[in-house]
Image (tube, rainbow, N blue to C red; front, side, top):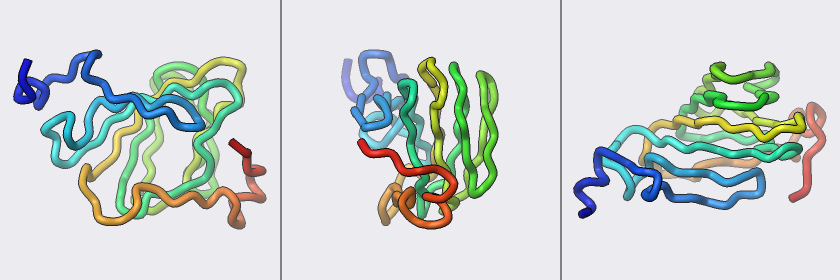
Amino acid sequence: MGKEKLLRFIGSDDVEVDELPWGPHDWLVRPGLAAAEGLLLVRVRMPAGKAHQFHRHPELEEIIYVISGTAEQWVDEECRRLGPGEAAHIPENVVHGTYNNSAEPLVFLAILSPAHFDGPALVDVCEEKPWCDLKKPMSY
């Protein structure tokens, strides 16, 4: 199968996996994998007790959609528990964090836009105030 076929359909063998401290990221849509110019799509499998601690995306808007498990989802200084079928919208450059405080794995989709940007993808702020006062930073 040539690269042209991967531009519109991504099979399970085409998924690109990044191993990150808070769990594997299965990239389904990103530059070089799909033809999408404006979207990124990643499935995150977060083990119990892990978190993608407080951070922000300077140029990216994000939607987090829970597939299974329970997320303690922060958007700015507001926190909600999200279960399967629930979502959170994170505007560009807004601090947020996803924490799995349960005994079960958390699986969610993160949809981000745009797919192409100039600056860093994310800026970690978990050790800055007020974020470190809301949740004690974890060491990985």
